[in-house]
Image 1 (cartoon, rainbow, N blue to C red):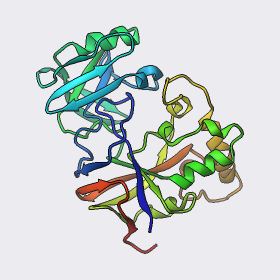
Image 2: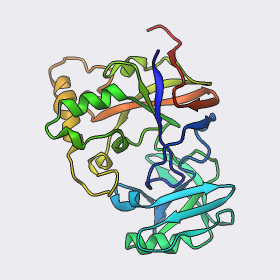
Image 3: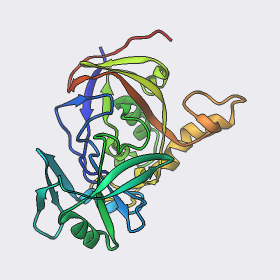
Length: 268
């Protein structure tokens, strides 16, 4: 039986990932996952595509208390509950309402980044995901990419920043789940479609520095396939977009834990 093998979250979008043993999945995703995000001086989304070294920052959030561990300085900590100016952030065409967070974090983050940025709390917890609240990939798919890529030992699943990793299925077997319901522990999701990848996957998940052309590695064995087909296959929309992993929505909220069973509920 396939099982959940890894979970990844972070309270501040773009910062270092945490690996919890369990999490609660709501219809909006994981409440404290990407609870906060950054915007630049013009209130546009600011993330790892703009400054990869954000992954060097470790963020912790519990009971309304936020702590940022930024290299080269003491931890910046305090209550992150006081709302400032209302803002609406454009998440790739999806408006996400929120408020600037009053406190010491924006100044500390601006110093680290080298330009003005602001910390934003979304009005709806879990809303600061790129498209859909759940992302999923199998360990076999990541291992396959590693095995077919020269120098692939530099690749690991953290580059893809996926919420759930599954073991016990074949490479890209999860691509066949599109449109189907899948039970993850105590929750049920519906797989929507593939995740288009960006330059963040080229960055080292520890340092944020570009150290591998992950996008090229994916295109090398997936994109070339699309050029040989008269009709694009399901996991290559738009005749060859760089995709890796899957998006899903939540149909039945519940808890997910490491080792929990993964079961496809619908037939093809």
